[in-house]
Image 1 (cartoon, rainbow, N blue to C red):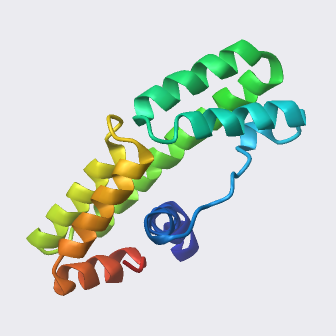
Image 2 (image 1 turned 45 degrees about the vertical axis):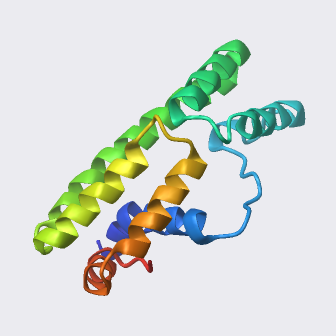
Length: 155
């Protein structure tokens, strides 16, 4: 159960923190493109590069359009990937809520604020990174330590 909690909660948070504080990352092939022709992988990489500084909503629309244009197995795998991600997000949200119940009011607010930033589809990934950095920089050490203790992430 502890490992499940880590996978559902801490792993996405760690990815987020690595994204915020990490170096330039290499393109990771999405699961729905595993086994796809190299040309499709290249197109996807270019799509992500084109939309890197655009709001998530625009990237998602472009991704949907690309996948629908490809059709076939890519579309089928993508739809399954989306369903799996939705389920994972729902489970993580429930687990996160349960784990956050005992946080101080300040830490609860910080958790909610950070979650809101992450879910804001009007922001680009770069804008989110900047907002996360700024928010984390302005958190008191006590609140940051409290969040770290509960969610097993290092800020």
